[in-house]
Length: 181
Image 1 (cartoon, rainbow, N blue to C red):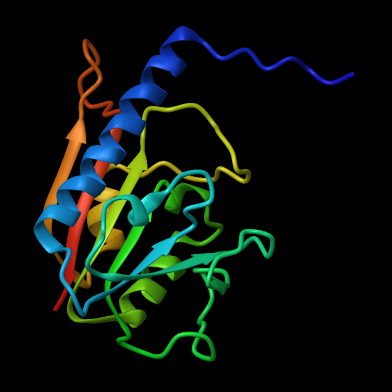
Image 2: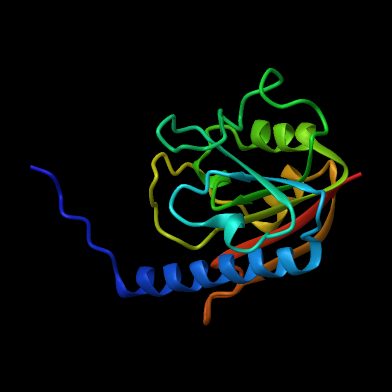
């Protein structure tokens, strides 16, 4: 017998906060960086419009591990995908709500670094104070310190967080813009 999953009101509230933050983050990134002639990779935009809703000038490619996703590139971002993506190809990489689902986030960030052009930007968001969620697996939560370590080869431009009210040092969500130097 399968156990019924109960989603608390707190979790529903946090999901709404996270979704709004991701939307605002992508919108803000597009307003600042969307440029004709640039190429953006949107990683795993399976359940939302992702970059396509906001980036109208840049050319958008999608990548997903799911062969049924209809992404432009079917690959695991944790692998070296040299046969599918050349070094320094993308101007931007959008990686929202993905790193917590990877089996090897260090390898994922290394691959993002490899495929970004020098001066290219990565836009990352990830939850911290949020329940285990799909698509499974849901393997990780990152603190500010963990994100700084993951992005140690990048120049971090912005690292923002949404605080949990009445619970210091337990942010709900992080957003990061980092540049490949």
